[in-house]
Image (cartoon, rainbow, N blue to C red; front, top):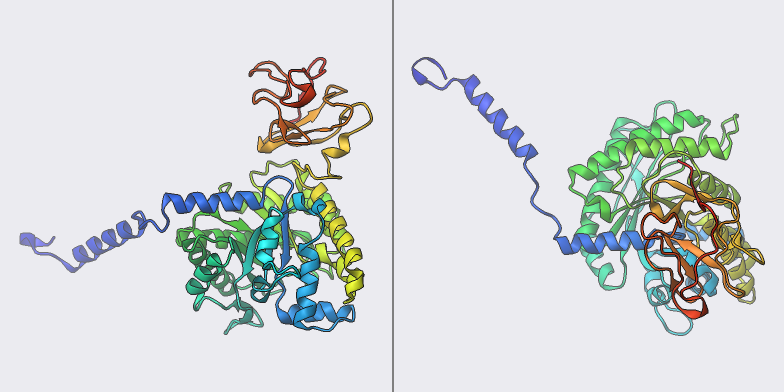
Length: 466
């Protein structure tokens, strides 16, 4: 105010600035109802349930053409359908390993030989259906070969239709590359905002968005440089998601592992890759995110499995599920075995099952046939030796000695999320299954001839590993 109560231009500017700041920080208009949030969170958690990962079968027609040609198969609609069918109809051994399957638009509307739509086939095996919704990368003007991803136009209507047609989650891929001068701030911010806008649109239609900011492994950069860029990109992505009021509990992240460039002369161990990856994630990804589903990023099947195993054994706290969303790393051997010949279907399915089981064994909480928990079995007891985060408690526990002689002559008992389960879904009574006796101490089995029998545990069967 000026003399005599007159309003000065400076006073008006100050008031305007105050109002602008207040408006900027005011709570947003709720984008989602509590029911919508509950549905999204449940979908996300189901996809990354313990022991499960994602099969990425969403190659575009152009991308799968390259893979089919590599084994001498023609890129026809029938060959594409048959190949996807052999993956989706593999035997039940793969069911505990796959929580979701990402499809391309064409595949969503194809059918198996028995007339069932592929989404129905996938759901019958306990997995959820996902859909690739982006329309590919395009050049980003004003940059030296950097890109953004197109497909936002009409996305609201497409997501609404995909939800009606059985899709519960979606994927959108943005690509950044490391060179001496890239990624630029423009490319990072543009791709972060595109991902956030996509995620918001998906959630409004009841679809869980998988956010995929892929940093390509091309180049000669070292591990430290990749970690630095990964942190900057993920920080920008989660800032954009916050700005767009995206509900993090109803999202999943699909990042690259932190690895050196393919042309880097220095070799790094899986443990070094794991430490760099988890460190980058801990610095940027909020714990509200239910799960991180790594892309294989040009790694071989074996490299992707070994590095994922090392990531899940990293000694740093990891508040999210860490699993896979693999395409080539699950399919390469199966594709070679199939080679475009229907007579090779069984052999190709066997290769796919093998890769899925290998990936499954590198996840915490694995309970599938051949997995880490079943691997504790001997003829007389469940063996000691596994170390990991039991049931997402955020701490590491391990069997000590021969304490866990929970067995029958015909069944193996598995530890899952603080419960002990036998084949046939016989669950232990809820309580202190660690057998320490200080929180109920219930160690009896429910159902069957073992009901009421106590575990033959001596001393303190559980050791805290920190």
